[in-house]
Length: 166
Image (cartoon, rainbow, N blue to C red):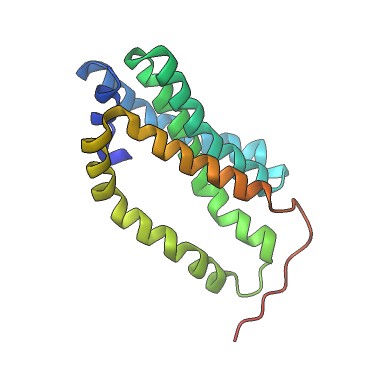
């Protein structure tokens, strides 16, 4: 998403200035979200943080869809907030679900598909933007909402699951 950020708001009707301004808000939104996650959300189960992180992108897309390109900054703030929270929750969630035993191994197994998707995403997203224009955000929002749905299937604190590693 970050590689295509100026292009995406412009495809949704933002001017070049609005698109660049929106991009300037992602970093501060990520930093603010990490502070909120570390201070306020750290006392809650990481499932809450992860669900919130997955919901913020679709909320930003909805604002952009309703208000048009002028709301690019609001979209960027919501997107950056989710991304900021997710960087922390990504490490906390497996620890809370599986416990500390073999954490590095499990984290690596769970993270490998994500890393491969992140490597392929800029090229794939570029093709989707060419095909769909600004509607490409519906694809990313749908994927985020599927993530929320999957996270809702997990129980908040059943205790660390036992996983056999052979």
